Amino acid sequence: MSKPKEMKRVANWGNFPQSESIVSEFYKPIDVEEYLSEHASMILRGAGLSYGDASLSKQILSSQKFNKILYFDTQNGVITAECGATFDDILKVIVPKGWFLPVTPGTKFVTVGGAVAGDVHGKNHHSEGSFCKYVTKLTVMLANGETQVCDRDNNLLLFKTICGGLGLSAIILTVQFRLKAIESSFIQQKNIVVNSLEEMLDKLQDFGASTYSVSWIDCLARGKRLGRGVIMLGEHATTKEVDRKDKLVTHRQPKFNVPFFFPSFLLNSNSVRVFNYLVFNKYKLFAKQSTVHYDPYFYPLDFVRNWNRLYGKRGFLQYQFVIPFEGAEKGLRLILNEISKSGLASFLAVLKALGEGESTLSFPMQGFTLALDFPVTDKIFPFLNRLDKMVIDLGGRIYLVKDARMAPEIYKKGYPNANIFRENVLLFDPEHKFTSLLSQRLEMI
Ligand SMILES: Cc1cc2nc3c(=O)[nH]c(=O)nc-3n(C[C@H](O)[C@H](O)[C@H](O)COP(=O)(O)OP(=O)(O)OC[C@H]3O[C@@H](n4cnc5c(N)ncnc54)[C@H](O)[C@@H]3O)c2cc1C
Image (cartoon, rainbow, N blue to C red; front, side):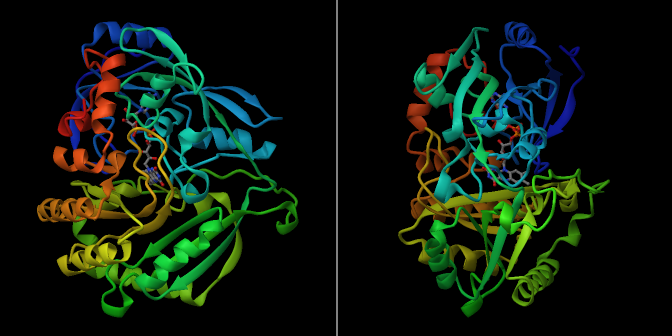
């Protein structure tokens, strides 16, 4: 166990909010037991790649030193890892043996514990579901220091409360999960340029049979061009489709780094407009179909370390919501018009069709999800409060691991199982030892 440290400022990926916290690290389960007996409240933190305050509190226990891969069944594609192992670590071991992650978010630096606690989804959610679907066993530690094993046959309620449960019911120590067989580490990528929102939504649904699909949209386009963008489809390439000797090559480490926080004025609606114009036209002119390595396809932002610093010291908010398919076109039109009118530009705007949710606090539902990044400014908070109401009126919800500012009533309206979750957490952690800034702000437990 690392010695108790002094108070320091900690923030997750969005750099907002920041907490004054004492961060300890652990190396063995016995360290966690000791820590739990000495602290009345705490939260577990993985890589801190949730954007807002899900893994922040005054007392933080970091899993990053508890990160070994324990067992890899190369025949059947099953792996067991300590909670602090990252997808980056795991990919380096599994890809050369012809296996891939069953589900992956847009960065490979998340920990397996964070992937379970957030029940993360990827570009294949519509076709293959979220990460917890592939989890076959968890070893966890309860607030009283007791270690338990849970899966779909044993301790099902505990298993279901932990999956997507944001570290509020137990500490995940190890995760066993199923992998996906691949013939190569390459993806057959097909890009389709679309010129309107109607076309975008129709095509995203038409391409439901593709394993991976996601789209980038120009969120500043107005009028007839509203919703224009590029759909990126993907399938794992077969050996025949890859014209090189080493077909199972892993990724390289990022070459670039943003060494300091940029001045925040660099990102404004004018620079975003130019960026969107260039991206849209690049796709219009070039490569419609290509074979690319999994790294740029799944993790396009990972090639620059600390890219979040481009948003300046005040940080940024990722606003990700989902709304049901029914009424989605009208709803998205309203929301995109509101964004376009506000002059509050989002550099990133990712739209995707989702399938049904898995866990008690599932973010996914059958519908469209849009993720937007906004620099933190005084104007952004009242603006997003307005968008929250529109999302709730459309029957949607906001993603908890990305959130840093929504009000408790928006959470309760968006997550119909909020009460069930609270009751279940109480069974496993009656004294609420596990608590985060997010759970306090949203009155989750
Ligand atoms: C660039 C980028 C792209 C992303 N793309 C996607 C995406 O496509 N889809 C998606 O779903 N998400 C996405 N995310 C969000 C990210 O996948 C999740 O927030 C994930 O949970 C982060 O994992 P982490 O290890 O950093 O956990 P943290 O951020 O440290 O913690 C997240 C939550 O998990 C809990 N937790 C972590 N470890 C444990 C443990 N061992 N036991 C109990 N609880 C634990 C924490 O308490 C907290 O509630 C993205 C994030 C970034 C920065």
